[in-house]
Length: 339
Image (tube, rainbow, N blue to C red; front, side, top):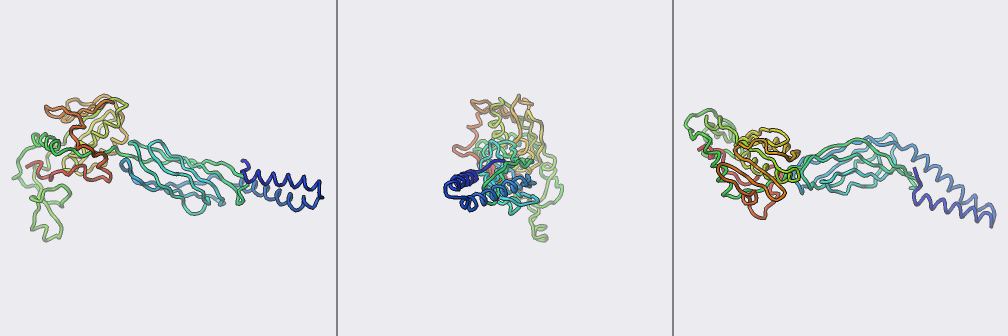
């Protein structure tokens, strides 16, 4: 616990009053010194009784770099007190996390912006408690942290690159479509030619026909690795390639030095969560359908009998196209993949 500048100023005034009382009589002592002493004693007592608050932190959703969200802190204590509250932000998350508030009153909110890929830990909260007059203060730490995930940026592949990748998949899938399997609800990426219009009219919702070849289609295997200093490059390339397939209705199996993850058609969340945490290292499976190798100089992608720089596969001047979990490049309809 310590005095604030205002507290020291009160002490100085009280000291001056003592000097004046010696010169002009004790009336100055009664008029100034006693109120100052009472105020300082009350300030010290109030600050001493302040306890570290119990913190409940409400976080924005996991998202992509350059996304802005709101963090809300609920500070619960038995006795309210004014304070300066500062949340601890990690490297990779930016924001003004300091505010003056009444601890035990309304929640405190501040804006953060995600900057770099990874799992980032917010907290603990630092609280500088003060008295109502601002004469004394005491620093407290409210334990407790929470984590957010920042996904790797997702680029938009060029039209030619998407065509080459889908051709790679087409070669591994049977073109047979005449064997009907079942009807199901329409999902994003389904081809309109597969809509069963009679059933759709009855249910007032789009219903599509599913064929055996679509149901039994195997996943694309992507394997990524590289220098540890280039882990962000690796994650960006792998995310771009994987989501190109997943958002077009093709399941993906991804292996990185951090493990293996499988993602069903249309479900990109497992891929993004894995790549948010993935570290660099050797490529786990050189025989995969698509192999990504990242270095500090460049990122290379090998598929089929072709190898190219990742930058040559994406549209120029467009970074971070993916910011809300959709549209990693406009894919063709899933039905067209197996036609």
